[in-house]
Image (cartoon, rainbow, N blue to C red):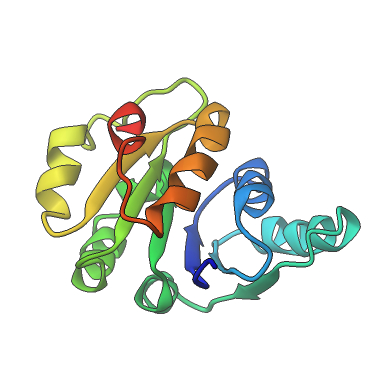
Length: 155
């Protein structure tokens, strides 16, 4: 038996969101926030086209999405918005925060692993690339059982 988990996808690229949809269980909820409405529209179309049939909701702000989520997946690019990050920090206590790095696997100059761990001290912070999304799926499925063996490999 798996528990229903809610994911907040904040500022992910279209391919990042589609990867997230493909690895989450059928009964989980994915909350989307992005400033680019075209990406969100495309995701709804792809969700229907590929028969993922996941419950996908568009949120009006990242804070509401993060508040409702068990797992927050945020793009590296959105971490540059310090106000947004501060607001997410207020609701991220006890949650898994996954930072999806850009395709070059690089951190923004002001965002590095140590800074992120300090920013979210009461959360489990993971750093992955889109290529590692399959490994993330393994971690997320085991997360229900408190198995964090995969977390070291992802961070």
